[in-house]
Length: 301
Image (tube, rainbow, N blue to C red; front, side, top):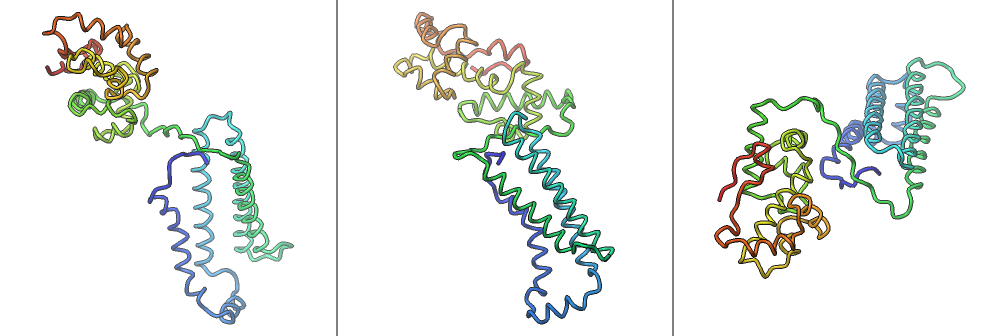
């Protein structure tokens, strides 16, 4: 309900406990009805392995409840869906309490008005129906939204000087040689994986040592690439929009906004001015002032 990410193969790991429990109970399931009844009539309290299964099941339920709570906490609270999910988790917690009560009733084997099966069955009924009710309340056409990234452990730990310098050199070399900014759909985690860094390390490096955020960091490189293309006489017949798409911009409005912000003029004005530049100077690649200010190595000619 919360994430727009498709379930991958790792999601199959969620079925491991169910699979193990089913395999363990398979010898019992394969018995005849008479053998099952005879075994159940001979029981005097729960066997130790069924008690262990019950405790493990409760631990798994509580672990998932805690994980679900963590996911919901990452979503802005002004969402009707979030309110529904919080109500659902309260029902889940009550259901878990009933299951714990059922385990305790089975452990003491006392004569009570309600049987263990009735309490445990009621807990399961609450769990299933509350979940289904919450799902049915979603509006038609609902699409999950991207979840904001979880706050990593040690998120406030600054990069050491040696790490910072090595990462900066790696980042600068990658941007100059491989030019990943030309991918208009480039994400922080994708670039981090390309640099063998964590997304948090890359975000911290760009924010603290490049003086900008990730989107603006990419746009600065895109503006420089577009400026070089606009100064190139060989590309004089290409449209500004085509050149901006090659530079990595996704739209004309985003390109115009970023270009005006970092170049001080519109792309059209910049191209007209470039026509008056001495040909020997056109297309030369100098290191932008913002890169020099933030310690990047000089650009190659």
